[in-house]
Amino acid sequence: MSKQADLLCIGAMLWDVIGRCPRPMASGADMPGRISHIPGGVALNVALAVARWGMAPAILSAVGRDSEGEALIAAVARCGVVTDYLCRDGGPTDVYMAIEDVNGLIAAIADAHSLEDAGERVLAPIRDGRLASGAAPWPGVAVIDGNLTMDQLSRIATEPGLAHADLRIVPASPGKAERLAPLIGAAHGCFYLNRFEAEILAHRELPDALTAAQAMLDLGMHRVLVTDGGHPVADGLAGAGVISVTPPRVTIARVTGAGDSFLAAHLAAERAGLDRMQALTRATQAAAAHVSGKDMP
Image (cartoon, rainbow, N blue to C red; front, top):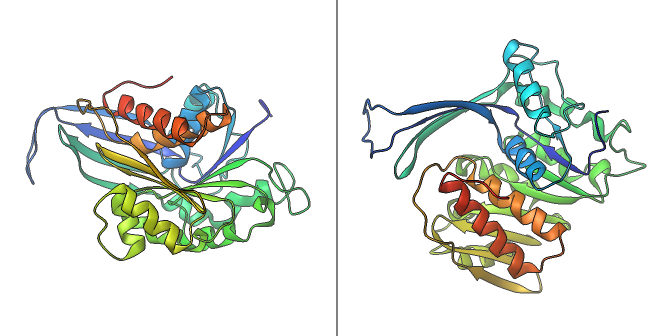
């Protein structure tokens, strides 16, 4: 193994193809802009971000044996992500394609069929002793990505190899938020949602992040962090209430990956011993920096 992993990221590892236009776009518009082709996927975005914060994340995902997969693995390994535990038995490497304009995301398509088809094979390293097993569960943080199927997430909810893990759970998109239902009652679960995802889980409108965080606690979550674009961000903890901070105002340069930057910075802040308010503030600042076209640290 290249190095000892101290955090697990389980979910999507793929190529992000992002087209960005510096002006507003209407439906059907054909506009000049820039197209980037970069490593992505929720689990991988978090892994790359926490690696920048000095951690050693291992990614559990499915990557094809095609040239795209080989290039992807080489690119992320150079960034400090442990890639020794990938499932390589599936189809072509997955791809996420998005269009963004000056106001944010216009539309996106996630082709994550290789991850979905891999099924339980993605979880083999936490069952066979390479990273963990039922007899020796993973003792640290495991980030769980909503790109996993409902069946995969249901398995994770009762997985012996993750019985002692600090689960950090994030939807891949509002459309996949309901996949997380099997994990809502996890005793060591911490959810990272945006307000729209919280509304889907609550089956009702929620006017702000504070209301959304309380609604998620009422639903049975142990802990939840809710973002709402440039509006106040909330952290709800069962038995300790809801706290909030307001993000700094920034000019939007990109939006894809902002939530993953928020999660990674929050993990790093808690790892460094910061309290709830300090960690929430650090995470909010990191997300704002990402949206403005910069990255922390």
